Length: 366
Image (cartoon, rainbow, N blue to C red; front, side, top):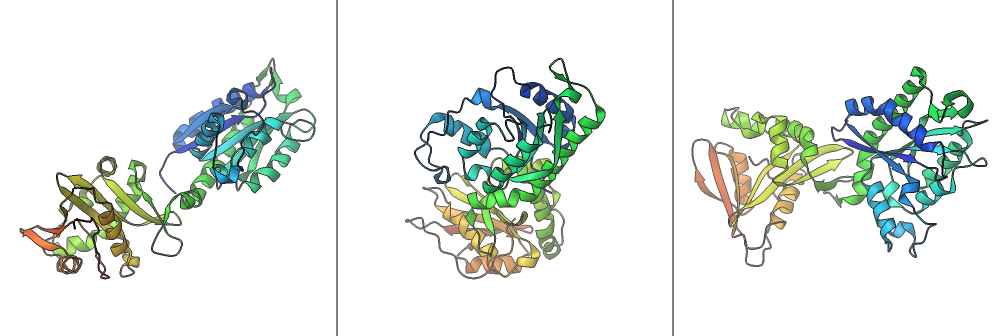
């Protein structure tokens, strides 16, 4: 399971003045907030009434992602940033509120591969027919409805405009959150792939790494740099010594590219400018994928991103990492300097900025 925090929108779907929805929403958030903190989940309450979305008024189809109106752009950004949703909905005439259907219809890809849970309220059916109606619609948008739901029969649960305390009901709400979080983590690779570049392996994709990826990066470093430690007869290698917080800190300052497949970090490389030099480092590939061109592909990505005006590319590896040094020489690097611990290698940046890479496979850069 990923360690990234999740953002969950609690969506109050009724826009009728004086509706019970805000009270149900307050109960829900109060009931699940402690568990959300434990799970690292940010709860964002959103009322469709406050959004004031008119009936769909965009000229282009939502699937195009081309939006003209500011209200659509704001709604798009809000939904796009979310990892999951809990809809708090009444039932109107055997169905969901028109405002809820309208809000769904406004957008396309922003909904895809995100879970949606439901808390319904009503009289005879406790709003359950609204949920069944909504589930038919959300699946078309590639939202994934939860099996766990909470249905409140107003006569049994509401007193004076407030939801009466009930430990069993609170636990049911926590169950919705727990299932939503598990599904949101499981679906994360599906959400990331359409917004990222294709990688060199079938099903792989590339995206920039952030401090939220620190745990995955830490694991990758421990896997990849053991060979470096053995070759150089030392464990005094930064990639093996760093703590989670140290990894998180440098991820905030380096331009780091990660290669993923099915939620697994397969490889990475980082780069940044220092003066007139383009420093490349932490190039690593999981051991079971060595020799398949992944390292070479990542190196090419780092070199292609060189800042205008940089005169050379700089990287380092262990002084006794003979295979690494040989391979980097094959990539056009030359040894600039070497001491007992580290070999510094450089490569000039051509005037046109196009840096060539050979077909040989690099191992790791320190």
